[in-house]
Length: 314
Image (cartoon, rainbow, N blue to C red; front, side):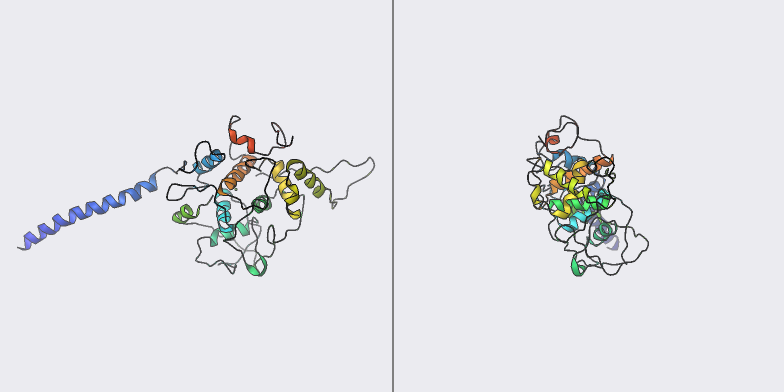
């Protein structure tokens, strides 16, 4: 009788084990499959499709578990921090103590490490009283400004930053310390969608009269930046004053992408996931890390170009 029970137990456990293995195989196979590069809501004729696909191929952006990319969805500040972490690895310019120092970002938050990294590398700053506002949508001009500040595009055009564009207040607990590695769980990055240049040349000052000199602290770069944005954007008057040099620098680097009208920046509108993908792609092109789009790509028409084959400002 005992032997019979043992045989019965083995007979029952084998199918059970098979079912368990079969249930686990899809999970294991998914972990080994190539990164998803096409999404059911990003059709081949979608304006940002080449930008999104190229970044997905490099694991810079990812889709949601349902196979969508949600290109029109607005990007929040915590997501922008994760995007920056995926796309760049800049040396830290400031350090904060271990643990979150932002009142509205807990140490248990999935975005605590990306936010810390984006802050330490100079891409993003805090709001007054130590708030980060992680769920606040990012405007297009804020995204451009974050890229430029973190990548030092406007080092020759210093401009004060206000909370309306890039917050200035820094956490009070800072120290010059070691850089800590930053990790994001794979499951979180796929759900929260982590999705951004070489130094720009200085904005050339206007020619001076013979025999005169231009002081180093002259305000000519700001005026030149204003001339650039006014030349290329029909809604330049909507750009916050302190962000004009950032937009001008990005424009000179052929980073800005505007759909459907390349001359309309819409600076204060929430930036979409598709627009972020386009900005990051062009930033990486400027850095020489990604090849430019093929000349026959329809998406080229939305890139604001200041030289070469450009008709945007005409």
